Amino acid sequence: MAINPITFNNAIASTNKIQTVGSNSITPSEAQQNFSSFLKNAIEDVNKAQVNSDVMTEKLAKGENVELHDVMIASQKASITLQATLEVRNKVVEAYQEVMRMQV
Image 1: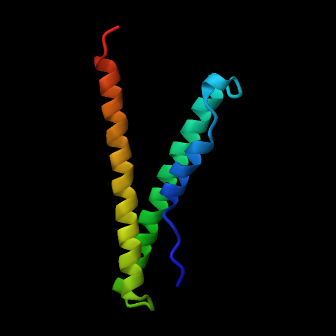
Image 2: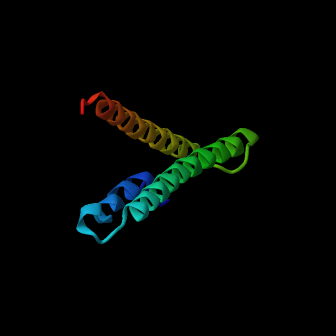
């Protein structure tokens, strides 16, 4: 059984490849589109992990041929991706609040 890495982490690692706006190689609107597509893909990956976990749990409950450890791995993977997403969200909200507190 092959265990695939959590795709949300792969998406975070790919942000290092995005060029900065100041280098004039990417416009602000392109940067906004890249960022929004990155967020959309990351949330879709979290949703896929949650759906996979639900499907595996249902199969186990119905008595289908599913190993318990596979169900538990899928469940933990979904839980970890959701927790990581929530932590990133909390940090973004915290950064936004900090910027809003700054005096001009």
